[in-house]
Length: 158
Image 1: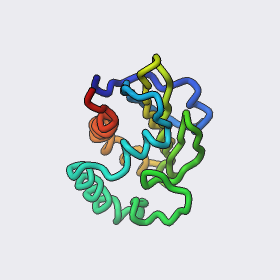
Image 2: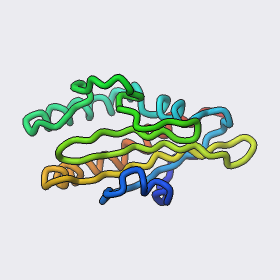
Image 3: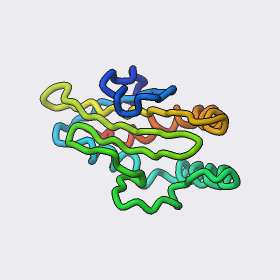
Image 4: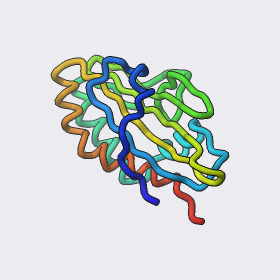
């Protein structure tokens, strides 16, 4: 099964209460032992070449505006290249706060049955100013392709 869009889980609202954008994608995987931190690591670390090139291009384009890139982060608590806000076997919350926007990537895992887990990646964004609104509008078309593509890395052949 391929990743698919889902509603933002209601229990994500308190994570970034002033978020003004949110979306979520899910994928069902045949695995009952995968934790949320493991799923985030498998899906979002070491992206395929085409995604790494898009991210490098993004970093070049936003550098003149003083926006943070992954290369500039020097934070001790990181996972998949992002700071960790909280972590448990069922949920990991990653994200970053910047002057233009704050965002959270929430990865949840839930048992569907004895052999299958649903992994949901929820993105919440709080746009802080005009630059944040412009930035989100520019990256959103890519985001809607990248997140499902990264989640598809969790699908293992049966």
